[in-house]
Length: 310
Image 1 (cartoon, rainbow, N blue to C red):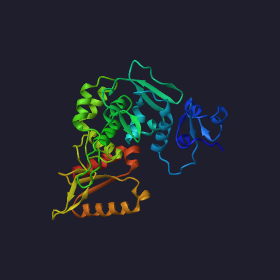
Image 2 (cartoon, rainbow, N blue to C red):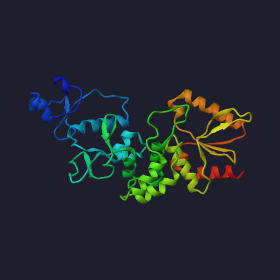
Image 3 (tube, rainbow, N blue to C red):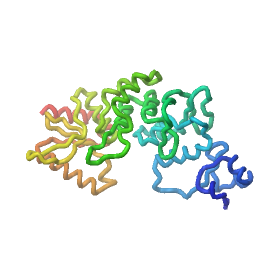
Image 4 (cartoon, helix red, strand yellow):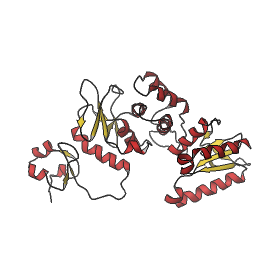
């Protein structure tokens, strides 16, 4: 059992800090301490069965904080994850990314991808979960060279989301549509073309990545752009609820059916009641599952096109 001084017992620390407090090299090699990065030690905590991907990235970043130089911050996919952005899985399981402004050299570390960039460096430092990160707009621009347009729009939709007045969320949106437009106009780095292509499709009302990808799938297939999460009323003018994607003229609703049936029975039952009321109000409701979006999108396009043509 390694007994650590109080300042080090529950957080990552550098070897230099530990030695200044009197810990020996022998103590710092104990099995109760992890060494995720050169010159860094972290007290090993019991496994957490409820830990999320965000927790894993946060812990990896927190462990690296003692190595960060002045002005250095978490960057790219790492910053996006810390902001809560929905990313493809291929970007979630990467090494952490950091960036620093020239003329300082980028980090060279086996588990870290270092960048050298002036992008966003003129802005005040941003912090997320107590960690220094690129601001939301800069974070999005850094992803433009790595994401396809649809995924780039999904991240922008998350950052631009404006909660309904009945459910305000402090600090949202993170980025306005106007800020996206001005940011892209000033941006001259890799991915500018994709960022420019994404701009017209950014919505302030989308509530999930699959919802955005479904909307773009239908628009790419030549369908009119649907309303996103509007309120639907019955014949008496009473609000039934909000629907994911609405083609009002054709009275067609397209809903992405996620994992509510598995993870939240109460919410799933509530959704089923809402959908039934849409049917009773003479709306055609099409429900799209994961397979219909990611495995066989062509069948979804055919189904929605058929419903719109009736």
